Amino acid sequence: MFKKILTVFIGSMAAIWISAGVMLVLFIMFIGVIMGDAGPKPVHKHSILHLDLSGTYNEYRQKPDIQDAIMNDGDQPKELDKVLEAIGLAADDPHIDCIFIDCAGSQMGYASRQELVEALADFKKSGKKIYAYGDNYTQGDYYVASAADRLVVNPVGMVDIHGIASNIPFFKTLLDRLGVTVQVMKVGRFKSAVEPFIATEPSEASRLQTRVYIDAIWNNISATIAANRGVKPDDVSMWADSLLMTADVQTLLDNKVVDEAKYRRQFEDELRALTEVDPGDDLRLVSASEYIDSDPHSRIAAVKRKIKEEFTNEGYFAVLYAVGDIVDQGNEGIVGGEMVSEITRLADDNDVKGLVMRVNSGGGSAFASEQIWEALQYFKSKGKPFYVSMGDYAASGGYYISCGADRIYCDENTLTGSIGIFGMIPCVQGLLTGHIGIDIADISTGPNANFPSITKPMTDEQKQAMQRYVERGYDLFTSRVAECRGMPQDSVFAIAEGRVWDGATALRIGLVDKMGGIDMAIADMAKTLKMSADNYASFPQIELSPLEEIIMSASQSSPEMQQAMSAAVPRIEGLDETTARKALRTIKQMRDMGAVQARMETITLY
Image (cartoon, rainbow, N blue to C red; front, top):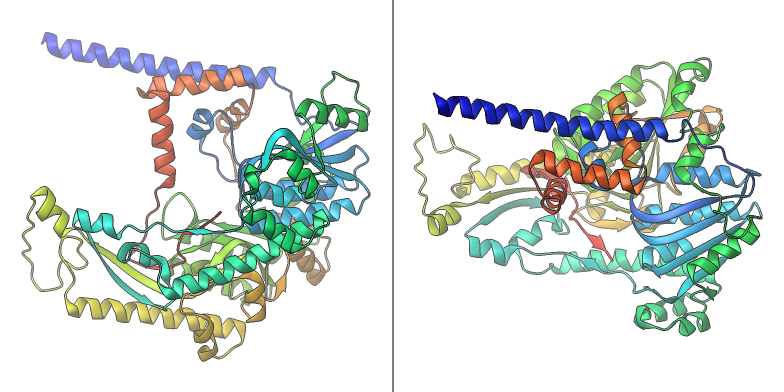
């Protein structure tokens, strides 16, 4: 009896402490919001648009991970669409004197960076200047910063330009040690997504396709840097081959890699003089997010009001973001059922006159890809134009959902194609029996009653059936491409087989229609519909509850508040902070892979 009472007492006290901890965190957040600035900050004269190249960049605003926002010191991903619009608006804004590119190690693909470079080039046509500073320039940040009128490095800093390499891990040796075999069915000799599980090095076909597209992307990047810096592309390649990151600053100056070497304080003093700020006063830096929220002409900030008030007479077109892995179900990426519902709703909405879909995906579920493709065909059946803008990736399933567009846009640095399908079923019998000592008894009504099973290898009959299944999927995929792109299926076979192409080559072989970023696709859609280029709304629209708004606002507040929240949550969960952070990172990195996929291999371009 006493034991039960003690258990109830301990449980009650634990609940009270947990509730108190939660209330404490929420109270801290609430006070932070109340004491913070109410509403958007005004943009004063002689302001500087601060382009912060640090952290992760997403295509658009996504539903935030509230716990991660608290645990991660408020460092939320930045939004590429806001940055691009802010650069465009700032060119004509008399309150913005210049742009400051602050290079601190951002994470985004080269196609996204290319769109930033092009937006900055357009900004310079206004006559306003762009200044870049970095203590240590990564290659990606330097690519963007090369668009600046003046590029400044810390006197003891470095610039890392090294070219591009594809880094692909292989797991077969590990799987062999564990007693795990991977049974593969695929179509296309270039479909190399399965190779890390069945080989110890890339196939010749994989090496060929990878070398071709990384060379093409590097040639584009080096040519852009050379043009911006007033040197030859061969000079940039020489920088890359010379271990530039080890060079002293004088070498960087002599080779026109940078224009000046200054400490940050000195650089900021120059910006103060340029923008008429008194010495010792803070620079009037405005982030892209703050600028968008404060500018009355911003499309993004006013989108909800426009849908309800301004668009009702003439209608508008939709910009739909399809970002991440394509999955049949889940909470992240392009979820098949949710995307189909969104497209269908837009198709049936008479106020929606057209659609630009922004695709940034390496593929995923072949089934979900087909469902999304069909929904987009339904959209077109309503007599509405449909364009696609490709981001860093629009490959395999990402190309599947794109191919039906009336017009496809991509950047030179986009990776696309990978038209192929594979199936992959692991068998852990060796692991269970040989290493753990578990034997599995199979009692069934027939030879295929337990298929597919990961505890026993497939029979020859089952392998043949799965291969036929994959081949049917490939035939459907290539027939969709042939139908939508207006070419014979045999011609599609010649450029398919799972091969990945860079954007410029994709244009030449007919997989896309036009070089250009999302701004060009939006502008062309507006011309097609004879509308203003501002007459669009972005989807899916992210709605935050009042509590979520408070948490997100507080998580982006003062460092002291962020530290308090970061320390409070692990105590609530009974985890130390380091363990909690590692667990969150691990969970976010996990990805489910279905048995049959239309996916390109995961490639990190360094």
